[in-house]
Length: 121
Image 1 (cartoon, rainbow, N blue to C red):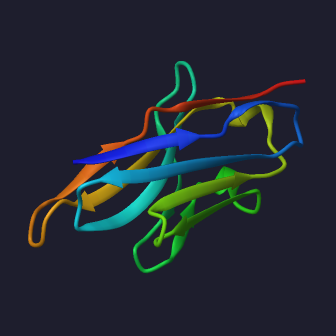
Image 2 (cartoon, rainbow, N blue to C red):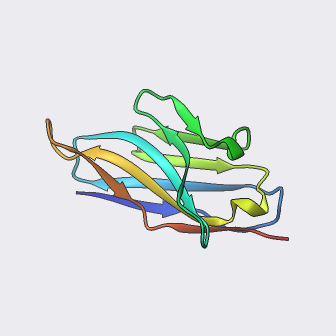
């Protein structure tokens, strides 16, 4: 079983910055891709950024150049640095991790508890 605990988020003015963290703990053999999702009220969930096991990064077009995803494999932790935040970035942000609980076992998805990011003047 994998537990994901998120931290960070909050209220910031447009143009401001926030950093989200997502720490994985529990019993698992390997962590695979790690990603941040967001969902605004009345909107579909979006994949904001993905950090693959091979250290490549994929971003939603609207956040390219403003957000940076990173992962610390020694700490089993993922981060999302969000700069130049815009009102339209307001949403609940969830981390998602694909993990293998045992050698040769299936890759399963796990979710963080979610954290509110509000960008408002």
